Amino acid sequence: MPMQLSKESALRLRQALKTTARLGGFGFLSFIISFLLSIYYRTNDGQRMELSTMQQFYSFRPTREPPEHVVIASIDEQTYADLHEQISVRDKFPRAYTAAALTRIQSAGPALLIMDLKLPRERDDPASDAIIEQQIRSRPTSIWSGELPAGEDAPIGLSGFPSFTIPSDERFIKAAAMQLSMWTKHRFGYRYEIVLSEDQKIPLDKRIVLLPALRDLSGLPVKVPGEYDLINYYGPRGTITKVSLSRILKMNEAEAKAAFGGKVVLMGYHNLDHGEAKQDKDEFHVPVSAATMYGVEIHATIAANLLDGSAIKRLPGESESAYLYLGILFLTVAALALRPELSIPLVLLASGLYHVLAYYTFSTSLVWLPGVRLVWIAALLISIAGMFYHYLYLKRLGRVWQDTFDFELEER
Image (cartoon, rainbow, N blue to C red; front, side):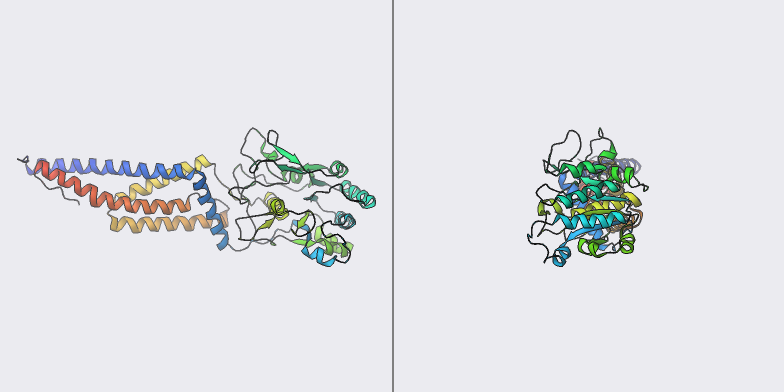
């Protein structure tokens, strides 16, 4: 026979049981949802989803004004089209044109010339080679050391990491004021990150491509990014100012000074069909657009970020994970405290507002807020958990109470 309680005793027990049930349900569901999602965030799949959000943000953000202090001297399709009658062998760019373009650029007085290309030995033009060597020595110039990563993700040019070297004429490397490992780190096939390695045993300035040359050779102020900061692209391919080498050859002194004087100039390939450029080494996927971007333009973007301090600021992975755990935990507890009719719209509204806030900080404050898509997943799980909690867990608990104490537990 069910136990009979006085109304006063039953009310006290009912309130105690409801409080215990709610706290137990809150704690268990909130911990499970928050913990599992924060763990998933640190996995490769979680990071792939996280960084794919940046592609969405770039698709909405307008193209930023191209930086005036960085310009690309480009051996591009236009160069080959303009010089096709003078180029007899299509896959070998004549050294004489490189020498003439270098002479014109250096005479304009750039702050720094970065040669983002290799100059192999297989040329039979000693006169042009002598001019190139002389021009490299004439002003602050850095040159690609020829190093490439041996592994797909290996940071290059850093002590302790495997690499191999494409042979280049040593006379040019020795003539340059600095040798750089002109490479970028990829994550899931895209170029997101400025820092080549997370190994903090290596000084930060040695893990950021171009930083040593900009800081020590250009004389321009450089803003060192944070350990986990991301490349802030100004727009899709072609956004940063590019001057075709064929146009450089036709410039007079005043035009050259206007184009290159006091600026950081990167000289490299902007084509794949001719010259030294190769699809697996010179053209890469970037989050800013569906179109690929040439390596020299990615390096130009990094140089501009270092000069104007516009890299996207990002927290360490552990901090982001903890931040998400606490945020989702708070959202879950707040949602489960309300009935689903109220909690589901509020959770969806909170997720939408966070999405908008993350886009705003990315676009204006240059700060990356983590877990936008993860918060939407959390919203779905919280909604399902809320319905389970209110319509199954508490109702069933009420029936157990009634059968035991012969007093109906009503949800209020």
